[in-house]
Amino acid sequence: MAINYMTKEGYDALVKEIEQLEKVERRRISGQIAEAKEKGDLSENAEYDAAKEAQGMLEMKIAKLKNILGDSRILDGSKVDLSKVGILTKVTVLNTKTNLNLNYTIVSEKEADLKVGKISVKSPIGMGLMGKKVGDIVEVKVPAGIINFEIIEISIA
Image (tube, rainbow, N blue to C red):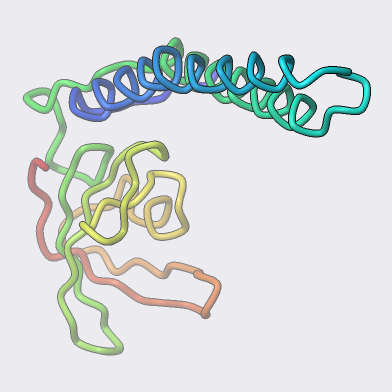
């Protein structure tokens, strides 16, 4: 079992997504199945087959999300060690090649959103930064090549 560490907000969003799928999407797909059944012979009914396939996919998605939820633990930000980069830390790094400062918050895979600076703990940059301290120079291998970062600051997200 792999534990998924999440923020309270990420955990709550996952619960809300599961509820939406179970209460709204299930009902919608059930309606599609009922409508397709009314059209007659099910053995040659493409609408029925498509609706049943959608139902199966939905149930798989719900099961997967419930699995993630069951393996999740909410992290308490007040107990985060700020002496090194870890999950729930916000890290300011200097790209030594471009001389640009970048801010990343290290989060679980489910919460990652690069547009707002949240990167997965399992991403190449996230893995490269984990456990490093202020002043460390980190060499990170990304699909585009190698990037060197200097860790400038570590704070709570």
